[in-house]
Image (cartoon, rainbow, N blue to C red):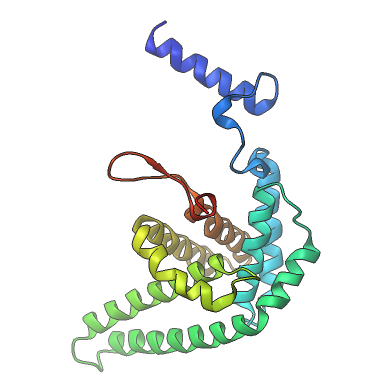
Length: 232
């Protein structure tokens, strides 16, 4: 059998296993994210989570708690576990107080950075371009830390443990940090273009918060590295 024929047979076997018309492949057992096998269901869940997070985070001070609860809901859905709205609401209530403190701190930082960028653009400050660059980098850093913390929050560990996990997460996965910043930028751009797009954008952000740390990675030696949830 030629290499081309072998690849064709591999693809056919993979499609048959995923559709259920053929035998399951050993490397597919157990599936990492069985809840994501139905792509239309996954799309619907992304939109549902986007609506949920949007509605709950309208006061803005509840945004971190909404993102944390949304990430927990999405993670349970992907693992084909119980992912009811009652469980998500319970997680939101557990994350609310600490999340409000996180929201206030993030809002203060964002306001300061936006003011710096505005002053830099007005020409009132010496070295304006450099100050503006620092402001934009700072905004990206705030978004990165906020999404990473919300993705790492759990009812058992709480916000303090989530913050303590951020340096290790960023140090061990710099590419993931880049993906997270790109996701935040995508959400901001599409929302700026058309406000109703904030709903699916937030759903995509929550999905990225769960999927980026869980993705298989490679070490320098070429070995696969599993996400944090699978190495525990």
